[in-house]
Amino acid sequence: MSALSFLYSQIFVRLPVPKHDFTGQTIVITGGNAGLGLEAARYFLNLNASEIVLGVRSLAKGENAIKDLESSTGRSGQIRLFHVDMESYASVQEFAAAISKLPKVDVLMLNAGKLEQKFYMAEEDESTITVNVVSTFLLALLLLPKLRASATEKGPIPRLCIVASDRHVMTNLPEWKTLNTFVTLRKQTKSGPDDRYYASKLLQVLCMRALAADIASTTPQVVVNAFTPGYCLTNLVDGVTGFWGLQLRIMKLIARSAQEGSRTLVHAATLGWEGHGKYLNDCKIDEGALSKFVKSSNGAQAQKKDTYRGRSGIGLECALAFAAAGAAGVVFADLDVSVVQNKAEKSRSIAKNPSYKPLAVAVDVTDKRQVEDMMAQTLMTFNRIDYNVNCAGVAMHKPVHFMDLTIQEWERVSQVNVQGVLYCMQAIGKVMRTQESFKTSGLHGPRAAQRGSIVNLGSIHSFQSAPGTAQYTTSKHAVVGLTKSCALDFAKEGIRVNAVCPSWVNTPMINSNEVLAEVHQVVGNVVPLGRIAEAEEVADVILFLCSPRASYVTGAAWMPVVGSGVDLLGWKIEIEIT
Image (cartoon, rainbow, N blue to C red; front, top):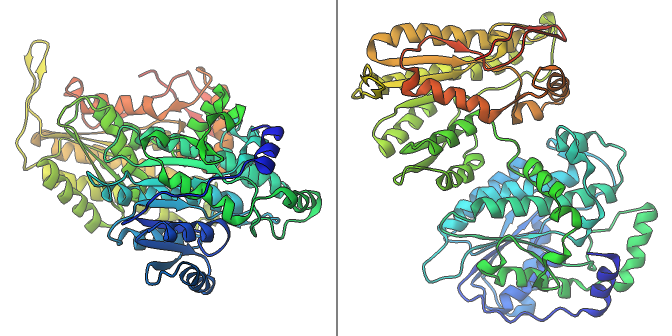
């Protein structure tokens, strides 16, 4: 949207009064106690919505909002109130859990947002990024299953609507070209509130488009859209000082009232599948109002790199590879099931088996009971388990001298990287050793029968070390030791056990760690191929070790790396071609 288009919209466009009938529908609105959220709630009530759910940071202000809404609409008993602080992941999760217990949700209006003068961190990111982007899409993913469950054959398609801004056009997000966009934004402690706000709104648009594309082929359908309400008279800009604050105050001369601006929220909630993945402006679908960057090839690359999906880890790539290779079912297990639910559904689009079924399961691999419960759920769904890939792992926060290593840090790493692998192998071994063996065909006839295959994820640190890495190096040495011992114990039972030990791989664990991310860049510049490995490439090696082509391989630890030998920052990486 150009400056002239913006001014024309603000001065001359009068948004239509909504007339859509929301009878029988439940509307959830975050940031619902004031401004656009409050006025949208008023419209929804007047348009016969059966229930309005307000997510608010201040319950006291929320109670006042309820009194205001009930007084002005003459409708009482139709409004529920829940607390949510978008600066806290725990609060977002609690809110999502509460909303998930409602009978249904027809519209999820993600309206809560902020524009902050001061730079301060909330969770892992600067507060504007946390509230406007990370928590917004965390909530979207957490409630996506509820929206799907609310779909009915004759009712409207559930809708997920994101209040974005036409100000996304004010940046091309140069940070997207860095190794990790969010890490780079965290470091910009001297950035202005305008820069942070623009970046957050562009990221919202990119994330919306990515999410919409990801779920387009899944059923039941959920409509996802984003829109700009224009510049409105709300308390969003209160507290902004300096030259930009002066500009914002002057611009109030052409600002819309909160009531008029809220019509864009209601309009977004009226759209069916024709609005899926679309950007809305002035209460109509208007992809032309998107910035040139969003529609460019660079924008497409940034969308792929920096959206809520992040870069896929090795475990996720393995799961997708199995689906694409014809597996009848794949279990997507993660500490936070919301992270993999959407991925599990997306895997249907690449699955080759017509009977394919994905299963998303929450599991903490350091809890033996949860691991056993995961196996029980898997058996109830699929009746047997043929392949097991143990990829759960954590990295060290930063290199630390051995004498300064705390027992807490030692246990944190070993509990996941070692104890978690032990629990998983024991639980899967209990299943595999009692199930029927199966034979596969080779070029010259059937091969030896086997009951299953296990692959554990090691690391180059399973063989080499570096200064300040005692906790991580020890854990990865242990993975290879467990693999070799387990392979010998299971050899006569038709169960193969191997490990894959990659060097630097493009994964979220690497990119979310500032120290590792910087080393990642250096390593990528010095290896012979000129880059580090992609997770998909490591998944291919794991898939081979699970396949019948590796029927005579057990107790092995493979390093899928290339080159001749690299000395770097204390590492001596012996490299072979595999």
